[in-house]
Amino acid sequence: MDTLTARPDGALASPASLRNAEPILHLLRAHLPKSGRVLEIASGSGQHAVFFSGALPGLDWTPSDPSADARASIAAWAAEVATERLQAPLALDCQDEATWPEAQFDAVVCINMVHISPWAATEGLMKLAERALPRPGGLLYLYGPYREPEVPLAPSNEAFDISLKARDPAWGLRDRDAVTALAKSHGLTLTLRTDMPANNISLIFRRT
Image 1 (cartoon, rainbow, N blue to C red):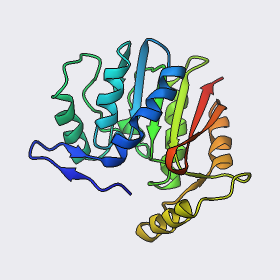
Image 2: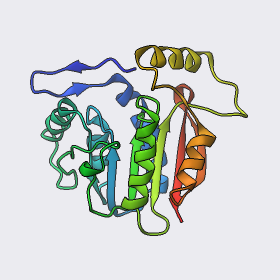
Image 3: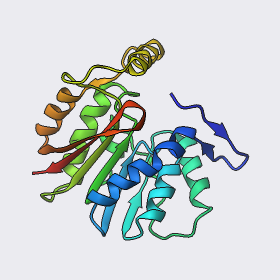
Image 4: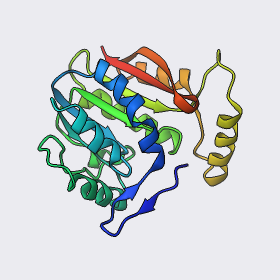
């Protein structure tokens, strides 16, 4: 879990967001369309949304988070940059379909949510992605730590999994193959799996 610090304007600073932003951007730049609309799920502090929207100027970036504090932080960070491409944050909860946007997108990005939420949130994410990405080739990007049958679990990830479950038994590292199977049931096929820093991985799914 990341340690957040709060500024007087409501912006939350996440050290992990700063550390992983560049490696994630490298992958997003290679695989996202040059132009289009991106929906970010569980945007947290908003630092990723500001960073990615600034670095990928052809994309219209819509952040979201069910937490009012997170949305206030996103707005505070966004106020520091002048870009019409970064939209106001949505109060989107993957477990509440009433909060889901009706708009269509070209990509859905979800960083570090799957393991810090109940499995029902991942089920909602896949259902939402199926609806939000109606066109073939639409992209779903996931980032975080996972259990993989062919890869020994790093001791740091094992300890992290134990700490997550101690905080909430419904949390914890997910099995990559279970996530992939769930995505497949919603018309999303895994097309790329890439190692990332600190024993995380990136998964890219495409709408079929």
